[in-house]
Length: 376
Image 1: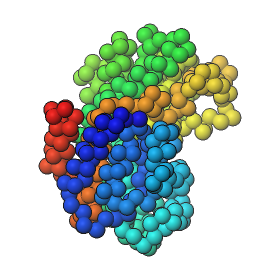
Image 2: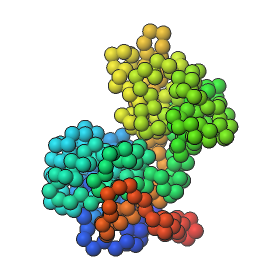
Image 3: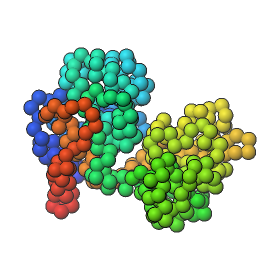
Image 4: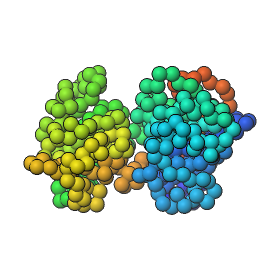
């Protein structure tokens, strides 16, 4: 957990960000979040702008001390995609927590997307909008035929670039730590990075800095051109990318590896993911086909006749095993989430995808520099 003086500084930072956009009539909110050590301070910021109806921690990124603290004053509910996949169960849950109220949904991964239209139509209150944190969540909302309400996305914000860069570093750190737990090393194992977005770029760069040969695969040929210009080998197909790769890092947020793809994974390869297994790896399709053996903490061998590979952290975000720390840079994105919440609560917005205005981002960045760098 944060030291008292650190907690005080973070709390003051979020208070200043929250108070910058006046909210007269506070809505209710449902907050999906990674409940890490610094997150109670973020939730205090959310509570300055809204009445938190419930917190739904991402199940594989929960700091127990933070969970205990949050439970003292807030309702904490279990989160799973099934809860919001069925329209009636999603509606029943929302009605149980915020009946008849103005409501903002804070999302991390597009959980509310499948039933958003149903919630908007049938909720007894008023669904003001959504604030989404991640790229895979951004895609889930953007892919809807017609958004019934505004969705503020911070996934592609320049304030997220430092976080994405540092998360990429932490993914490689945790991957290497688990490989070394088996008395193995990265060197000598060619790597395949699937997905060359901001996270994929950071992961590829970190692997390259460790003198690991990197092949990049992305379905977007523009990104493959970008990877080629940075000196990486690229592959035109996923099968080509997987061939001979001893390290496979999945950074797409949208099923990098499906059932048939696992047959192409090289013997003895390690597979790591940057997000939840149900977003990145179709491991459920391997049930009954592969023998599953836990050979080290957080290292699982999948084997069938003549073929085996290792999955790290059960296919979930590997960096969360070591705290997923990116320092105070994470606060920039959380502050922008607060700004998105405040903008939804303070003025009406048309349905569609929205971004926080440039001048608000500049204000957040300036405030962050004052509290955590230039003024510290």
